[in-house]
Amino acid sequence: MMTSLLTASELVAGYASGEISPVEATEAALRAIEERDGRCNAFCLVDPEVALAGAKASETRWREGHPIGWLDGVPTSIKDMFLTQGWPTLRGSTCIDPDQPWEVDSPVTARLRENGLVMLGKTTTPELAWKGVTDSLLTGITRNPWNPSLTPGGSSGGSAAAVAAAMGELSVGTDGGGSVRIPAAFCGIVGLKPTHGRIPLYPASPFGALSHAGPMARSVDDVALLLDVLALPDYRDPAALPPPAASYREAVRRDVQGLIAAFSPDLGYARVDPEVAQVVRSAVNALGEAGLRIEETDPGFGDPKEAFDVLWSAGAAQWLDTFPPGCEEKIDPGLRRVWEQGRRHSAADYLRATGERAALGILMGEFHTRYDVLITPTVGVKPFEAGHEVPPGSDLAGWPEWTPFTYPFNMTQQPAISVPAGLTADGLPVGLQIVGPRHSDDLVLAVARLLEEVRPWPACPMASVA
Image (cartoon, rainbow, N blue to C red; front, side, top):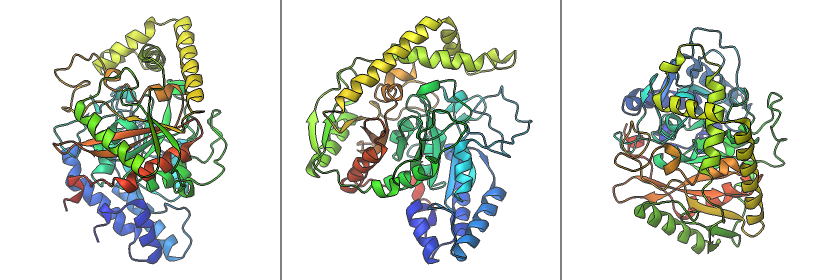
């Protein structure tokens, strides 16, 4: 059996029956990394010794009938934005000294360990996760496993590429403006940005209320299982929500037929590639045929990019101002421009942007009194040439200009998930985004699972190469 092609749910079923062992699954994941990551550059750190030790401990627990979690023994990676005890957390930056004690686990890392997941290593990120593609001066260019000449998106592009290429079943990314959903769309996997505070974060992000962590996997069920693990509380995040009232692994199977979905092809202002638009519309039609009530309408807000830019650049400047002297010339030139922009904003600018963010949240709260979910494209463009912040030859100045569907819902703190909608004529994935009211993570997962049922998608070809 080719264990690297199984979902986490299928692996755990195999562990329970004795047909598969965590050691076999981990060895398969490590082989996949060795064979495929030279083309993707998804990992910045791989630790076979730690991974196999974790797998052997899990194998013993399963053999004795005492697994410590629903995902015990599943090979998993984590974006190099999360603190990990024993491994450096360099955040894609040459300005962070790797030679220092690394003694603290972030809440995400701690929950993974406590629930027995096997830690393969850490995935790449642009410097400080600042943009919607994944390359950095530290780790180079990360590439899309569907076509390595193209970007996987970002900033969680390493995680998305790893999962798509079956280099581990699960990963955890961060999302401050779309960084889980953008690469999920470009790499043909599932990526969830849950309600703000649903997954505790530590240390506190300088991007404040924009910042989320999110599970990434090849199936909606796996994302729900991983969210059950990551949603457990941690005292270090004062904004963390209380534990969920019910498990997501059960809620994902709720019946959503008859619910009302607003479909907005462009939010009223976004540019969308015609082929992306057609693939998404076809998927929405399939949801309608499956019992969802579809109404085509826009939510009624203008592009909040100006306010987002203030919040984003001010957060980046606050963070970078803490870096050692001399780093200004060593960071990504694009990030340096954001740093300079953020330094020009006043406290009044930041408070005005915060007010616009709150107003947008209120508007969407009212919208969801009439519509259960909002459906949009995840990204309006197809994956483009790797190593560029914007599509080459376009008139776009920065990554938020081609991601207008994602960052508004960081501002509103709503749950939003990207699910594969289909493929373009040249075989590239297209993502569909489902947005729900705050605290309705179970609902967006259930609608996503309905799409998965009616429009199953193929595995990435690279994942099938032995």
